[in-house]
Image 1: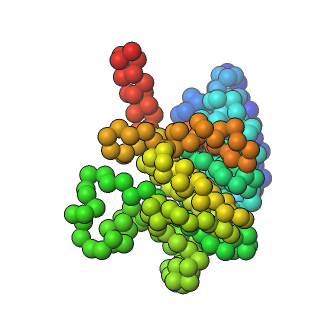
Image 2 (image 1 turned 30 degrees about the horizontal axis):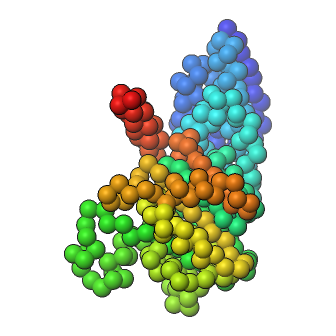
Image 3 (image 1 turned 180 degrees about the vertical axis):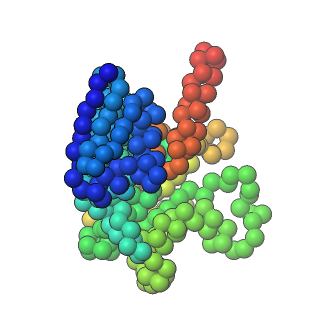
Length: 323
């Protein structure tokens, strides 16, 4: 039996660490098979040597996140578990405390995982960045936040968000309305992110002014995009020809972020994804960075992470049986 004591003088930090109804500490006790007692300023961890050391490392990282201004809940605790269990938890302390931007409701947007920090750093340092990984890793949301930051600081004059309008089950021709009304459902997630960042009134004004453009990928053909922050979302559903067309729209003083999840390709007739080809062709080109997210970077409900892992396991086992 081993024990370690952590002294936490700030009652606010202690409350944040414990969580409402001690939910955070209960998670830690269950995950590492230890007993944790809170007495005044002392937090005592008891159990076998290895488990106590892991629980101590987890609490140390969580305290650093609390002191960094992060709100600690189940999602954050489980993320720290995964980092501690892999022995790379010290990297969490490299996550920047600098906010990417502030939304219209006053919410601060900043990276929550090591993968997200690398993504933000890549966007800052490169002209073209690919963010590739599963749903829920913040690929599009953080890209939009960086675009908003660039516009607010007058680094660019325009934000352009685009997606391929892939027909997923319904033919565009059979949907009601004119062309814009038909493609709007494909673009809705992009509208939602911009609404949150700018607020409805500012977003509408910038849209009418032409400072924000949200359009299907086909609308990019034949254009040169200068002084713009351009985001191509759902790029796994582009063809090889489409993504090459898009990349060659790059103009002076512009930045491109391309996001996608290669496990969710909806292209018809088993056509090759342009995203997969582009990441292979461009991986060694200077000023282009490819950031790959994993299930560890998922910042949605825990079940999203579990679903991704279950499908990865299923596909792996199916591929092995087919070999």
